[in-house]
Image (cartoon, rainbow, N blue to C red; front, side):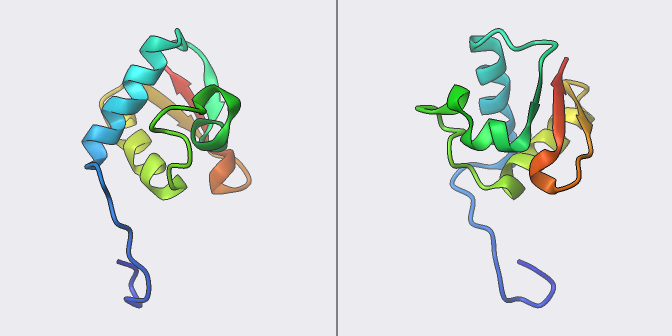
Length: 89
């Protein structure tokens, strides 16, 4: 819920579950040491047909922040939230 209580974000998986989906995607497609953007992770050709395709950027960003806290990714700021870069460790 935003501060003005005009918007809310509904999860159908918890943030830690989305983090696990990202981790499994990276493992499955051999993307360790690769860099992608949030936009690529939610709407790129590589994620078509996966649970990540169409995932709201805020949900994905929260999952990536959790993975960063666990030392599994490193994030790099872009000009917009969609341009947030992610390096998989």
